[in-house]
Image 1 (tube, rainbow, N blue to C red):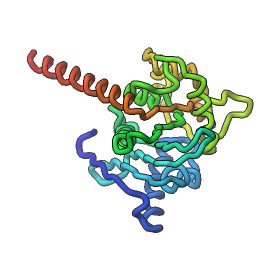
Image 2: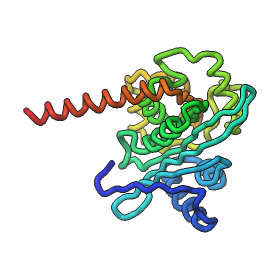
Image 3: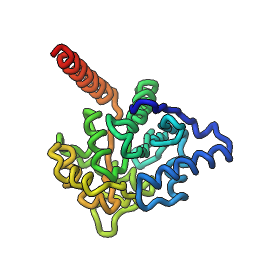
Length: 257
């Protein structure tokens, strides 16, 4: 995190009406700086007042106390044809100069994994509709098992489940389009250089996202699912620990020269 910044966590359910309105106003002003196509009513429904069991929002503030980023995490109880499911959803945004190192999504991961460890026998999922390759890159790099992925084929049962979830949440399908691509409604404000960077990026997960969702610059979003099984959580933790260890060893080696 950039020096001078701090993070605060807001339990939205504990706010009264006026406090929730102030939070919505503040975060929507930030949202307008990050995304094109902002609609306050839709933002409020998705971020600060969704029909969730609970909502927690991590707000990143700069040294002047201004909101520069947010990660909203929601816990939903969803009833589908195969039974009840616990589903985490998240929305995140951060100003360009404060981006890097998964600065926003880390909070969502931690909340979902913490819940799973407290409820090991529940069917728990982390479900996103991703509008930008950077978001997909962060998730793909964090989790061992994620769908869709360049590392493995998506089983038909998982694919059907993702579509059912998206329909249950009201994520709009494109007319006569791929059912795995939805109309996200907002477009990230990328500069021409940033768009060119992602187009030229050679990372396998980024190239996979661009092939699967070529219309992301029009607000098209890719259905993305992380099964929060104990096995996936364990392997994800092992992978993260290994990366941190490699980074630590590399930094120490650099300091010795």
